[in-house]
Image 1 (cartoon, rainbow, N blue to C red):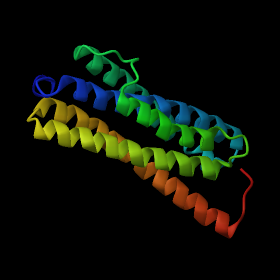
Image 2: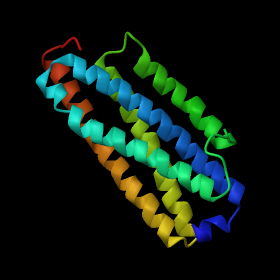
Image 3: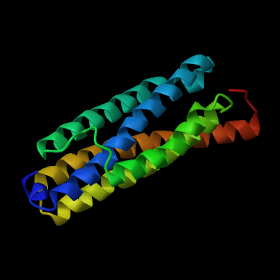
Length: 174
């Protein structure tokens, strides 16, 4: 993180704190969706459990990794920076959609898909910033997590598509 830390340290911490706030939210979102998946009893839906559990665990690893990077820069992983506050506000709508007791599983997966789109964009931004700062090690670390997020996004895109097709052909009450 040598090259990035030589830039505007407070802005780097702010950007990492934004990503951290979103990752924390993602863990909660995945936990709730996984609860619902376990409760369905639908074999096709239950097949999502293991890969989504792995994705949830990656989100947790991203959270812990970001906390460590922020501490390395002399920041606090619990300070709500300007960008972190924005991420918290943005996440609130997704959390409301997923934690609403009336939400169907397809609706919850759709909201989680939206969260993953934002998550991908956030990691992509970090890759671009590290690239601009010529911080090859951080770019590599950010890119690794971006690729994991791309896998999350691909799974959710397929799941939402399959469920939408299935709902059109045979309505289900999840």
